[in-house]
Length: 139
Image (cartoon, rainbow, N blue to C red; front, side):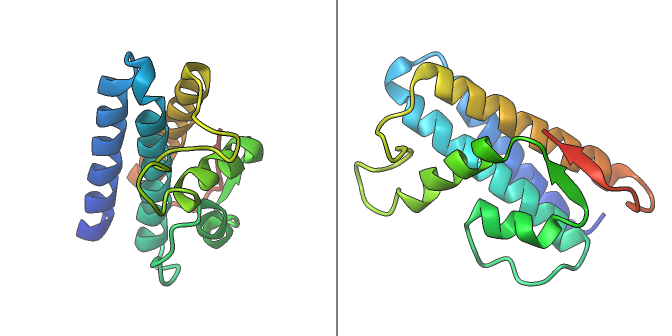
């Protein structure tokens, strides 16, 4: 595995760990959700780097997924789309981790974090395989 791939995976792990620590605080559901989005983004970027699939200087989960779609199948595209809005809508203070309809609920934050863990785990396992030739099913 390339060093840059390991760095992306480590950064995704850090986001997951941060989100886990904050999950019990109902006031921080937006921050948990934002870290979940970041973990998915960094997991996708690890896969893109390892497979030499081009530039990754974008933050849209949907566009990143487009680069790896031939390798992966995200079954829950609705959660991917909702997570994508968390970054897109967080350009200014006070908007960090907000959905278009407002602050994520505790259930939203938990669902986003569960989704992010699933994406990270499947990408990590895929990258551990010697030839990475099989398509992976992401949650």
